[in-house]
Image (tube, rainbow, N blue to C red; front, side, top):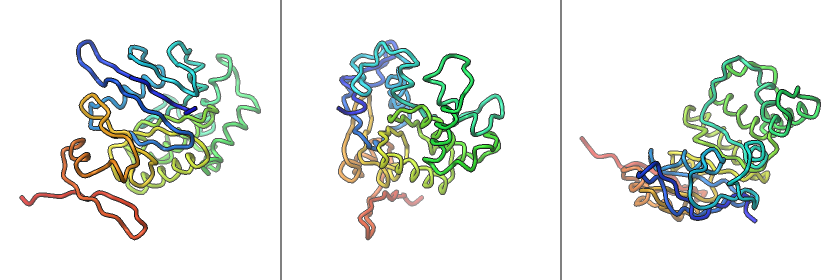
Length: 259
């Protein structure tokens, strides 16, 4: 049984289709990269998978359970979401932010106890971030804040992580450091669906890629097999060539026209 399965998934706003007949799975311990141009339906797909919008056709299964009638609390125990960024109204400490992830299994307004605090510290330790537990969230760098959001997701106790362009607002170094952390989580058995606009992120870290284009599934498979120059041009409208280094790693190089 795969942690996540989508079967014939479709979604439209009134008469405007977003995607149709999407069928794919996320395997145990896999980092699946989701690619597609702006407007291709990546965020809408996440909303359907997370049970935030039930107006879809088809079915979504998390850990073998159809999510159609799941409550928000039940969904929080099945999958955790990591947004691009988060701007809390109050300057919570890192510990307080991560503790919020433990609340999915608790009563409303329950005060975190020793078990929740232990879970929060364990989540921070999984990404080697425990030394930041007393820092204020809003005083952290963008990369550090993303690490906290990942720890908060880990604290939920689920093994399925849905990440919406977690590197979008980070500099080059922080992008790589964050992706190495996320890749390490997949090796620990977490199943991760991560959207990105950068094909090189998929080449470096994803086991497979899922590409959306023109309301449909454009490709799915290992990056080195399906992320061809033709597909990248179809997705993003740019010409690239692929190169392979001595270790066999593939990357894309844009072909720039002279002006």
